[in-house]
Length: 237
Ligand SMILES: [Zn+2]
Image 1: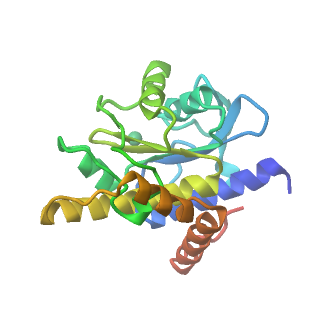
Image 2 (image 1 turned 45 degrees about the vertical axis):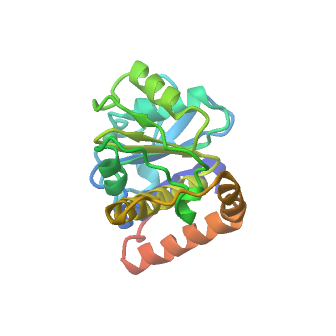
Image 3 (image 1 turned 30 degrees about the horizontal axis):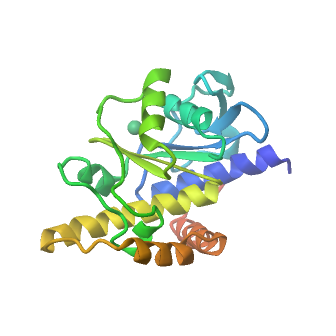
């Protein structure tokens, strides 16, 4: 099995896992950089995120053009394209229509993930919000999202969802799970009172235990098992 075939399979798995975790619906997508190139593999526009196969993946370039594939790329392909262009360290990108994160973008209250352990994955301080609610359909909009992301792991998109980046498909998947859990806890805690935000020292101590390959792999393996139990891992390709 070639490295590219392996990445296509992992993309299909992660898509079904994101669907099973209710982090994408009929839309939302994950992509991965093609090793040593100015191109990336991404889910196609029309295929269900719950049934997509390795063979369905398409190739796009950093200008958002379709390079190869039997389907067209998602209309928001520019979000991925320009994140890779802006950040050499980014190997994988996910765009989620994640419910709790989207809810938190609808109020004028900063979301500080480092008030729960999953949220500390993202470090201290409020999560950046890209304020334009329009869908990301151009290179310029993609650049603007990448600018708001900065050097971080995630950016919230007002009234829409989020974009999560990382060093591998597994890392991005784990970050997607942690982000939604942190948002959900933050929302509930906010209803009860003032949220106790972690200090810088507390954040760093939690982060050291959380941002590890072993934790990322555990989150990945658990969701592989969960998605298999849901009957959604057949015929990946
Ligand atoms: Zn979207």
